[in-house]
Length: 267
Ligand SMILES: O=C(O)CCC(=O)C(=O)O
Image (cartoon, rainbow, N blue to C red):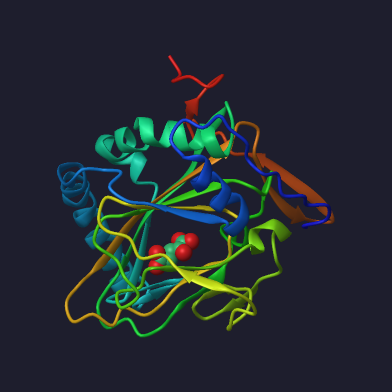
């Protein structure tokens, strides 16, 4: 489905990024911003998400025999669409940081595209495979934005993101379904960077940046992230069906609301 992709560098003036950070995003496909959210905001968010994650893990364990698609009880869980259940999570996605980074990296008219918590439990020995977010669901324009918000300190031992540098510029790669999730390749063919980040920091990357997370080899540290993704107004999900291309607008009012209209906070 990736036919004529051309990466467009983002140009300033920027609201939150420095010119160097924007240059790194354009060149490498990611940038790590530390100390974006204060400890109180993060602990309130964890308090809110933990019970929802526990409920999700119980469903995976009890109703799906411990494994549902890419989730495995006791190892890795995905809890999507928190904004539909939690006013606090919704308010979080509307914080000025997200409006500003979305302005810098997407433009003047932006919606929330997706949100999910991902918890990786100690003793998870499998990788979460190399993939692009646009490899899971093909969105057009292909170039949207992922903010990987660290709710806990995260390093290589506990499964921080690793990214393939510069490969976002190629557009969406072909992915193969594996038992662990969609995968581009098992071993990265080129330069890789680890993106450790402390609680309250954000790894900002493109929907086209190939990334993976490693095992969580820590003794007792549940690695927690809240992933918040934004797409330009007009973005559509593309799906082949019966010889045709379905095109579904990403504008569900409940969970894909506008965060920027003409560069401003919507009324
Ligand atoms: O946080 C993780 O361990 C992997 C999550 C991820 O890469 C994703 O949801 O796209």
